[in-house]
Length: 351
Ligand SMILES: O=C1O[C@H](COP(=O)(O)O)[C@@H](O)[C@H](O)[C@H]1O
Figure 1 (cartoon, protein in one colour):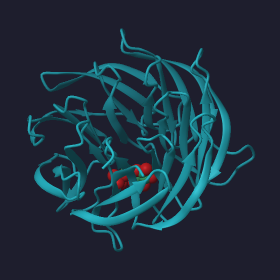
Figure 2 (cartoon, protein in one colour):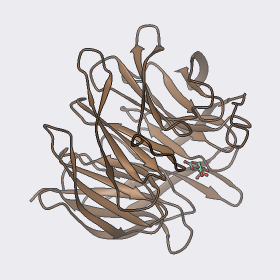
Figure 3 (tube, rainbow, N blue to C red):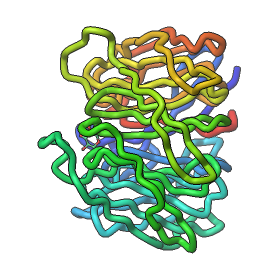
Figure 4 (cartoon, rainbow, N blue to C red):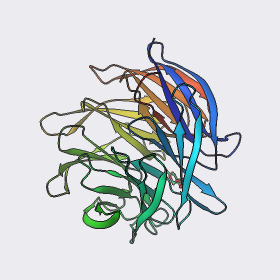
């Protein structure tokens, strides 16, 4: 039996207390031991350091917000609070750590601001080193009246910080030297598409942007030398003929780069695509229901054989087995109760 430990970020409305830990038996597709391990307000997104030592959670606090750092006890799953940094603009919606655990980035949907943090060698947050305020708007008056930064991360070689803005239809690449964010390049997505998240191919020069408003994946060529994106393909994540309301959510690739998975909130499904190894372009394989409401995010487990989805509005997790050869998903268990789950993430090593 191979057991992995994972963490769930939640909205602390209803019964939710904050961050939850769980275990996953990857041979039997079984999620167990779900328990609250950090009490804080709305830790919707969490990021684990590559050495599995630290977890960073976005959070809100007295009308403000920022990120909190915790040390992970890998055996028990317990978290010990280390410290926190309060940003100038309230609670962010996304956080990422770089691979050598020296920097963190957060994105704030409500203010449209990206914040860069420096980290100490023991994983504690040293300081806020820089901020970048997005400006602009898009043609969708309700959702794009101003900038709405939704994602912050790093390009694969980590030469650039990358931010995705739903409000301005932009993906912005920043240099981040001596802790300072400087805008380097902006990719303009189709007006009104509302880009939300981005995922890079693990070893080929391709990037996949999930749009929330047009429910599409934008396939781009990523030129790491220049730090630029070039659009190659737009492909819908919804079933043909689906006309009801739906909003794109998260996007992830399999570790081998052969498959892309994208979430649909409203259609409440995961769209599975195969990646053309020569062009990076996508072909739809299938769209599978999560049997839950509003799959805000999902994650492939470290074994690659399970995809776990977090359905925010039904307060459930869904377990799919994943065929590593075909990329296809098979429902194993739905209706695993967790209050308002937003994201799920795993420690890389089994316990
Ligand atoms: O995907 C979404 O994200 C935004 C930002 O999250 P928040 O926790 O900072 O509010 C959210 O407002 C929006 O409802 C949701 O669809």
